[in-house]
Image (cartoon, rainbow, N blue to C red; front, side, top):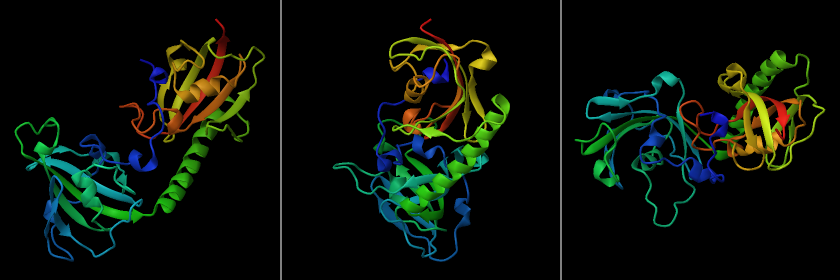
Length: 305
């Protein structure tokens, strides 16, 4: 199935909810930094009762724990006893989690969320989570009573600092991707993007002379989709067959409904689609990670056909 035609999750989640940990899947992006055998260092190991589990400290640096709204960068892996069942160390990046500003009424935080709220930069610990608190046992834990998470916190960052860092990193990556696409499809074109009220950014590389699609009209579009790391995740150009859909009917991601509607037949353009107008916090596994900004080179080859 074409990635473009996978409908994004309706609506955007609030920031705090966007970064909450699901029972299992939110942990699967974590990376191993230290083993439980790394016990020692400042502070003696101790055990803390959690709602649905237990926290065992290995290293306590004395650095301050995060405040509500802060972002925690950490490494971790998941174990069933001594058996390592999941690790994303090879991905080369840490997991990031925002400490909830407030808990919804009646909601219980995940044990790993509770643990992170107690740990400062440089701390490490193991969280033992009771399997019977889950609706069903996850794969690999059918005969287990606990699930083990080994965690090492590398830094704690305020929400303001985190947003500044994300904005700076996005700007650098986006500049590189745009330049690469311009060099390939329209050398010498300006990189000056225009932005709509929704947050969609676009750059018309070549203005078409045909009609502009109206809501409900069928269009044919050739495209190439690129992540901010420069990797192409989908391309109709490589398949030799344009995609067709009705504009404004929700058959494609919202950023496409809006962006293609801005063009005239024959136009070539770049669309920079933020997560809320694409695949949101869930992404489109395995090719599009959660909360991804997407860049598309598009050619509107047909309107009303």
